[in-house]
Image 1 (tube, rainbow, N blue to C red):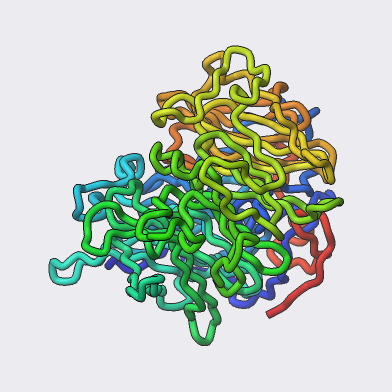
Image 2: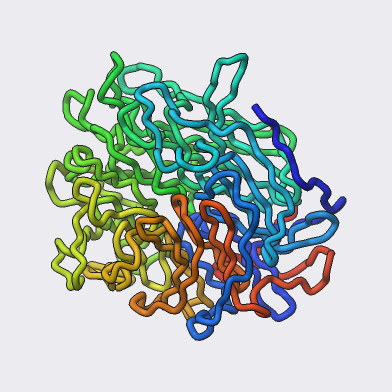
Length: 595
């Protein structure tokens, strides 16, 4: 295995880092630290403290910079952003980009200058397993030919300087013997240096027949963004890109301390009973991939995610019993305690059809809404390949009511064509034969609006808090898809000043994969405000917005768009740390936590 090799290691000798998320700049602009996928653990994708970019001025944005030279592998994770970070004896605004070559880059967020670049082990390369050479062909085509860092890292602000956690997929060559491994790393955000020995993911579960199911990294991939909640790191994993090889859905949790490094806390398997015990098909499946979307967490520490296809009734002689969770939305306790009743999971009643037609519910990730008035205060919204939207009460998720009966959830909305909505020339296909329009990539939420990306048009639905049927049946359909402007898109992000000046950002692309960053009025996505080129895209593209700048990481480069002379977090004191009021990305004051 190659060791991490730094480009720049010199950092400030002493630094006290506040556990903050925003730092006010000289002009009063709050500089939001984006430390996790979609901004928060509810995965709303909203930055509510953006005061520089507004619908009125966003049309004047220009390209501030694009980095060079090209990345050593595609970037498919969302960029992360830290304002006023100590590097080389001073403080800088920094953007972090991870690639499929197991690399992390740290760039100056205002100029694109490279501060450091480290490679954390040899990237695993196709075939990612020996059985038939099945792999994620898209990732195999990237320059590193490997599936290195896929899931978005997470930054832990409780350390000084902050620590970054991420998962690498590595191929260790020991005397000609190749060992496949998934490893959890902790690195110093100031230098990229490893803070401890990386933890090789491992574990096992015992299924309901008493058989031990071991974790086999060769057949698994960590595509979901990492979740850090209450000091615990959660990792979701699924297949390497197809279900014709042995694979499961796994969740593992770890803690990290400076003194002891990583300590595994718990292991959960989504489908322990579903594999053919004699080998061969069918395999268990039920992976967690979510198009790179992260696991979510509520205020009580419960963990939520969506799963891919699995044959839930296989090896369950008396019928499916709620012990295996293919094509499901699952709720676990903070200690990864499994669902014990229908209140803690939801499986659609047409799960047989989803499985038979490769229509993963888990092609996107869930979003948790703010607390609601009325009978259902705790809401989760899920979405799958078949373009069906599930509004679920997190306190009573509905279990399984099938086959082919009504789902016991708050609301169930099918694709706009089936719901007989007015969609112009766009015909929604429920991802029939993996073609036409498909639900893909994680949704976003802002100010009683939900935005759903797809292999198809961008959709916006309105939300009525406390309503009996709170989500509108029919969406606003973004028009550029119908006119041939794109065929697919990444996951959207929202910038706003509280409940005003909302802008929805997304990256779209045609069949050539040449990406376009687009900005829409978040109150009316039929109104496009801006577009700019971002080059070839490699996967789950998600824009990051902070301090008037929009960052997009693609196959080869990091692009930054903003308003020249206005964008960027400006320090009130150059070269020294700031002691400033602390705010989170939702614009609420929080207390400092020095550790």
